[in-house]
Length: 379
Image (cartoon, rainbow, N blue to C red; front, side, top):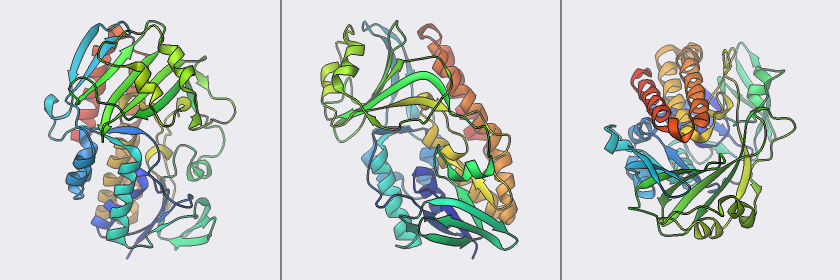
């Protein structure tokens, strides 16, 4: 049986293992962490990603832990409602959009991988540090020693070791000029409990907030902090932030439906990091190695589509391998490179759109996502 090595046990890597298994392949996940924990805050899964997880038999469990937003509302920081956009089933999609805690989603996927592929299908303390190809397969060098497989999928995130080996040289993180502050608060969900909200201030500060289940509300505050361009030096991911520093950014906001002090002040942990992506690659892999998820196409989170695209990647990869054998690595890239490059461009467009252009930009982004959903190859 063909065995695929997967570098990275995040949402993309674990979904890839499940999807490959469903198509009759063996998969081994190589994860650098000592022990996978339900870390992080909230994310959104768009309908095309929910479809894929539902077809893997995870729909009921996922829905039970998530919230399905029916609308997204845009406000000014003074409380004026700008417009409302339906989401998920309310927008006519065949599947809901789901908001969920990232760590809970990852633990659900991890449990499914271990149950279906075996307890040893995810090796921790085994981050991929390099690889070698031959006519017989791939040897992945890991912190725990070499591992042999028929092919390697680099799903090892935005700082991907596999990507760096495939594409040495200049490949900088591109900073939007925005610092993101994030948290998740144990407060009563606002409005009807099934609404996302985006608040746009005159000085460029934006808030995105939505319930993620379990009486918890996720929030992201985007603060202009510098000039866009290549990020110089190392990015600091999930650096701790102080509530007072975040609250100072919204001191003059007036929202009668949301208590900003409670939203930010009751977050058990606050994080900050730069909003970055990378320019699209002309191709992802070579020979018996390819990329997937953030390793292949890191993108701004403004379109709520990073994790969703990695889930679609996983299904397309499995379909192409099932149809074409290992030659499917290249047809997978042909199918996904252009599509994900379009999403990167759409997310950049959504980021720069001001409040007056938000309805127009959101409509174009949504249409592009739906086009991607309809045109992705399926078995």
